[in-house]
Length: 431
Image (cartoon, rainbow, N blue to C red; front, side, top):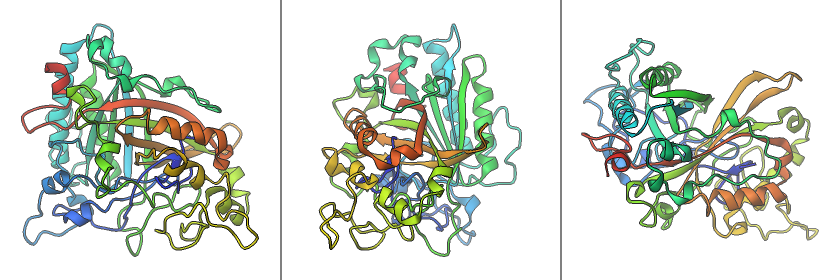
């Protein structure tokens, strides 16, 4: 699977996300420490812990004496980088892809992105949309709403921009055991909407969908969830639907090579500098099979204790995995096919990515098994050096893979953020 392994290989699934911290208030006035702390979810993947200090600095302060609550959390839309990558992970997410309609080209795309950016800025401030406002989320604050946009490979030729398509946006290779539904994969435009309130997230999605009419048609939609802030007595890493602590070790902003692994540099087209690439995988968990395994066997498949997420090599939940550790009988403490070993950067030439995964549950399949699992998202500077080599190794030797099915996939270029008077993608469309 494109498991949700931690960057040290600690998560089940593909390479995934962060230093999740649940239970903290998401109000305006985050401290830099709070904003860089992260919030998690995923297979054993999670949310981005934090970012370059620009996002923290741009979070609006709370009014004096104002109560700090879930609804008051406000994350500005405008800035050097798009929101929704480095911020603490929200409780709800909507993912969607759109395709340009026949006849729509560069000018129509420019108009749509201006419209979407203007509306997203209003909604993230807790203001009503300036058109197509249904009042679905009336009375709620912004609830840490973020809206993130990405461009699929197919967009460029349709918009007359084929010569500006980045090399790294080439289609992902086929991986063994993939069972992809192409109707729920790819797409010209990708949108990620996160919020701590389900109605706030839905309202933003609905408004953007209606604004796209006549220019772009919905290709697919997916909805996911994470732990709600405040649900635990103390801040702690969340769990995925397999019951595993998920997201202990994501790349952290303080790491010397963090930006180089997550954000695009000078080797990319100028319009993408400071942006990123995101890989999407919808990974169904075979929960009936997994839950029939004894807990000690589950732990050996992952390489971590289920109780607290500590590696089988010893220590606590935040202890780094020691891949050389042995049991008293000389066998490996972390089995050779354990997810954390196979996904570890040390096993993949240092490859890592910033994971931001959400759980999903879409009812039951015809055989009565749950249609549930992980919406895996991984942000990286180059998928050819991040996701692809790790997923290839996982597909060959990860013991967790027999409990997973990769059913949808996408790769998108995520441009940098927009200034106050601009829109996302402006450097591509007007450069």
